[in-house]
Image (tube, rainbow, N blue to C red; front, side, top):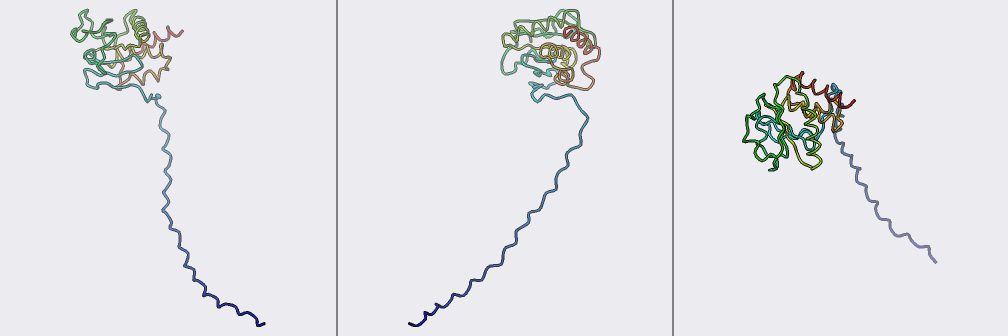
Length: 198
């Protein structure tokens, strides 16, 4: 028997040259921003602004507590009426904007001048009213003429005593402009807080 012949070999396939991988441009790593001066911790939720007009200046600073200016009582956030309003505007016994208070069941008035200390019993009455309104899941409005000093200082005191916020946290919620609340008024609120928390 004759040896078997090997079948003719197929020509070897030429390999395609390997593709070079595309290099994607590397992005320069961003440097971490330099640490800024430590500010008061700003709450992401507060204040919640309802109206920024100068004579309204209306914002929620905590559940159930709004702060505003002289025309804020006439503003109805979400179409709801205020359960109670605290008027710290002026020194007269006659509310300067009486028609705005129509439909507000509970009114509390402690008129005093801006830059003065809180009248005796004022913050105690506001605290009792705030606790009562919150127990019914209602909202109160604390207002003065501009919504920057007297009402902001009263709300500050409520946040410190009722909500247990620190000085910086409470101030960050109520402060709108530099230089406000006025020093005498906010110091008066801080003294009341120290007495309540002692």
